[in-house]
Image (cartoon, rainbow, N blue to C red; front, top):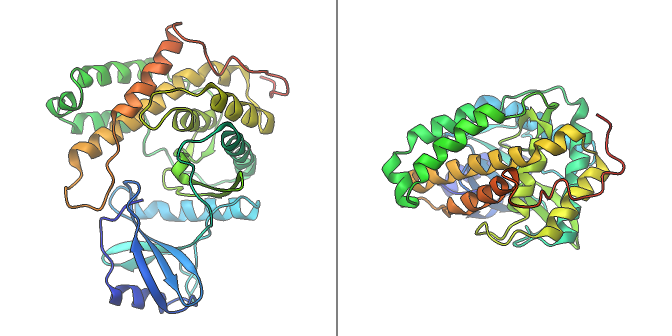
Length: 333
């Protein structure tokens, strides 16, 4: 979440007048994240999130996101409902951007997840994948391997190497490896694709919200677990891999949904690719974000360090955390 486009009091009042949500009382920008402009809106009746969709989100994809979240809500998953106006519309123009009013969910995102929190999100991810098994909507992954190459080409090698010497060459090598080794034959399904701790809300050890579905797509299902593993099992700077968090996450997901042998074998490569994807988006944003944007830039090297961890696994220099757990109860191949 972030703020790129500002909303005036008049714009907010005109928007809320279309809904039965009460009169505006407060509106505060939310600085976390890098994708859209987000505001916490308080009215005389309740609190909401107002999201303005910036250029990275295609407005044509919004019906997919709305339908997917609605499908999960119908399956009793803790997701934030899109609020329709009096005419049943979910998307409105605000300050020159398509925008949506979204239900506010209580909870706090874990800063440094522990094993119990990792088990809770592993269980929630398993429930989400089970619920999405019959979801018929489809959207290609906007951040697939082709998009990684486009991002890399947009970043001048000198700018990448200014982040870390030799980074441009390393990215080229990782892109080539992903092209050679990506396990495209694994089962595909709708996935969240961005399940970081800051996209999860928790209270008393329970998941109270899974939010920010704007990278959701149909792709390799177990890639969702790989992204989550890379996001949850390290210190924020990419150091300090936590074996207990990793084991709790994988065990909870495996118990709730299962893993085939092929999926388990592919997880180190998928996690390595996930790290490359976030390294590239962070590097691009680090270079391109305007200095006056209300945005917290994120360190690209935090994902280079994670990438090095998964590379060591594939090179036989470290224990594979995906293979070190009990496989009882897995789905058959």
